[in-house]
Amino acid sequence: MSEPAGDSKLEVKQASKEVKESENVAEKYSAMTVSKNSEMNMGELSSVFSAVPTHKPVKKQIQFVEDKQEFSRFPTKAGRRSLSRSISQSSTDSYSSAASYTDSSDDETSPRDKTQVNSKGSSDFCVKNIKQAEFGRREIEIAEQDMSALISLRKRAQSEKPLAGAKIVGCTHITAQTAVLIETLVALGAQCRWTACNIYSTQNEVAAALSETGVAVFAWKGESEDDFWWCIDRCVNTEGWQPNMILDDGGDLTHWMYKKYPNVFKKIRGIVEESVTGVHRLYQLSKAGKLCVPAMNVNDSVTKQKFDNLYCCRESILDGLKRTTDVMFGGKQVVVCGYGEVGKGCCAALKALGAIVYVTEIDPICALQACMDGFRVVKLNEVIRQVDVIITCTGNKNVVTRDQLDRMKNGSIVCNMGHSNTEIDVASLRTPELTWERVRSQVDHVIWPDGKRVILLAEGRLLNLSCSTVPTFVLSITATTQALALIELYNAPEGRYKQDVYLLPKKMDEYVASLHLATFDAHLTELTDEQAKYLGLNKNGPFKPNYYRY
Image 1 (spheres, rainbow, N blue to C red):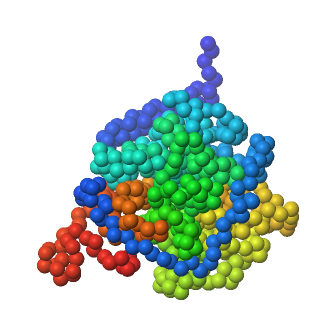
Image 2 (image 1 turned 180 degrees about the horizontal axis):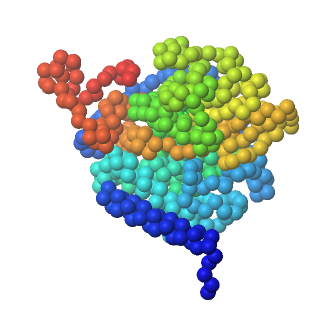
Image 3 (image 1 turned 30 degrees about the vertical axis):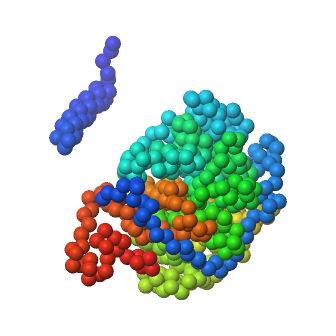
């Protein structure tokens, strides 16, 4: 081999010197890296409850879906595919509400058209792909690590089986955190059938993992409206299985059963509801004298309102917006419609990142709270032309109308943090003159004839669970509350609860909170006998009257 020319020799020497220097740096880095190297048994739960029926006035009647529309015959297979694609062209592309471990190249065949069997030979389920069960099991195990209080409740009560004989039909978001709740209910003796309360929030691998263990799950991410009602019907209407308890989120399952299966509904022993929308529906039934079973309003429990609604939304609002739009919040003008606990959490998070936050409110008390927290309270029409982001969290309908959407500036973002998809008038945007362009999963650009684009997230459905994830620890608090409410309603002696809506008593809220304090190594101060007498309290609680506002 001939030697390199002069210039080439010089280049070889320089290259050799650079390699040696790189090796020295690597050795130094490697060396540096190495060198741097409270108790309550289940028998006492019934005595804890002294729930008092509450009657909250409902200002506006919540309209039921017309029977003709809600209970119409199911379309053909081809019609289902067409409807599903028109609602969300790529909503089935992602297996999880967040990043998923699973492959997203699965075919677009509707799960209703597939025949799937789990390892036990059962086909009593309908999920996207049962083969994803192993990935879903990993997600459930991760969730369990941050839900220690619920796991603690499971271990304490497992031997007593307080839900033995309970047949629970559930309609909630199907996520890893919900799976921990469902498996806790099963461990306590219940049989469960489950469906999703939101067509976009299901984690497909988690649904598969639950189905693999024998829980009958009927849900997948990206369902059509028809699929949604079909899944609810499959949970309720099955041969040889009579549900006696309901766990609902939004009231759709309750009202489907009430309207279509009234004889089954009358045999229900209790309903547990966790959303504003669902609770309004229950109070409406109660006011009309049509609620024939006792119901527990978990939504207005302290452990739901002050933790799930506030702290969960304070973190997940940013997560959902960042994942979908990559928006920078510093200097952005944002309107948050509603200053309840959800609105308070959203506003606090946005303000912390430098956004200019406006609030709309109908309630003078909430409006005054917003003012005292440093937010300007406005009417939406006053700022509609200048804002960059609109977030709804009222539980109402038509909070953002077509006229207001027409006046928004180019590039504005619109999303919803309430349970129902009625807050933004999305239906008015499905007109010939407007073009819909799907730019990524759960993100649509709605384009006006003049070229203006409004960015609509999750088609107006719940942003955080449709487009991101939520903090596991906070959901542990809500899930523990739900589990205890189910145990109480199922085991309550006849006559304790009438056909009405009840609130959780303060003592139970305090118990749920106490289970979660160990996570923070928190140590409660104990009252002396003299102090307890002075305050007129029991040393073991409850420490606040039912009318106390935290």
